[in-house]
Image (cartoon, rainbow, N blue to C red):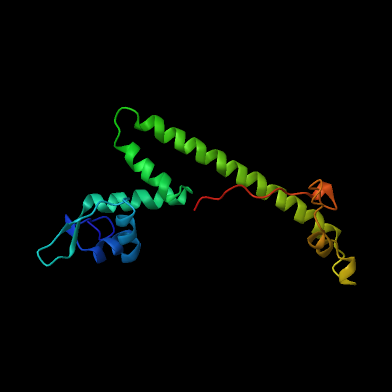
Length: 163
């Protein structure tokens, strides 16, 4: 059995950090936030984790990769232990996260399209006063009606990003 797949029955916080690729401080933070159960203590007072801690940290990391907030991850962990309604709750959380990702993608596509139009319109030489990219960035927003100088290039504020 390789060292990559072997998970010892009991391990120190340093071993857990090494096994999961997160720092000791991050593990302590997860404990304080309730994402990781407080481990037992050795007679020396040092934390002692079991195999389940490795699996739980990996769960947290994978959920973070999907863009879930730590608050959402705490909910997902609780839902994963709910045999009656857990899957329903997990699907609802994941569907909500998917909708947020789709909004972010749409926002980024609007930015890409606007930036592409500006780059195409820029001659790349001459006076900065004639640069459409700089002109667009300098454009003042009309507070009365909320329109940019060029309404066709308006890009709304980005949706809330959950980190």
